Length: 151
Image (cartoon, rainbow, N blue to C red):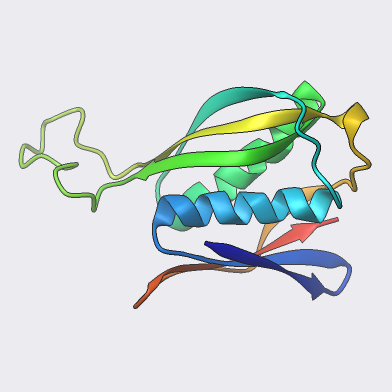
């Protein structure tokens, strides 16, 4: 999995590729961390959270938005991201019973990150994730994403 930071007018963009959707989410989140600071110290405790959305692109947006929220509430820079992504087109995730309350079209990411105290880093504030030019595509060799952040 890889990511590159791309200049984008007054904003910053992350372009990422990965072999799996979960690894792609982790890679884009790692790009968000890299856009926030030059070096990430090994301090901080892991925290977990879950995000649910109605589609893959919305899930990526909401996941990144949640990382920015966690930064602001916990006063930490989320780093070392780990994700498990599931959705309706996963094998076995939908039942054939239309009355089954567990039969849903929702996508979910079970995530964790290490929260580096903001006092330990010289971080640039990323204000928000945007839908501007956002791309999330399955490719022959895995997954691709392009996400713009407002700085």
